[in-house]
Structures are given as structure tokens and as C-alpha cells.
Length: 67
Ligand SMILES: [Zn+2]
Image (cartoon, rainbow, N blue to C red; front, side, top):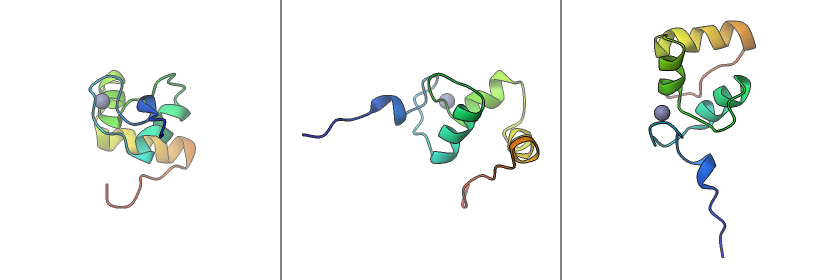
């Protein structure tokens, strides 16, 4: 009997599998439902790379290794 927390597993916009980095981003930006960084970047009209740099600057956050 495992309770699957679907809302934590996939992007609520595109359905992509979320990484812990995606979840952290969503949380920091106040998203009620987690979305992936690609969708966040699109929403902010930003390049994913730019978004990552911004997050690093503003929040001192770093993407997971291997991203
Ligand atoms: Zn997405």
C-alpha cells in the first residue's frame, strides 16, 4: 500500500518528470503546484540557463550536479 504523490512527481504544465531542483525552484518562486524549470523559464520569458543563473544570484541556489 503505497500512496503515490503524483503532484510531486511531474510538472503540472508539461508532465515532465521533476527533479529536486525543479521542485526547489517551484517552491522558491511560490508555485502552488510544482512545474519544471523549462516551464518556469518560459513563463518568465527566460532561457533556462539564465533562469539558473538568476536563481543562483537571488537565492544562492545551485542546480543539482549533472543537470
Ligand atoms: Zn514543465
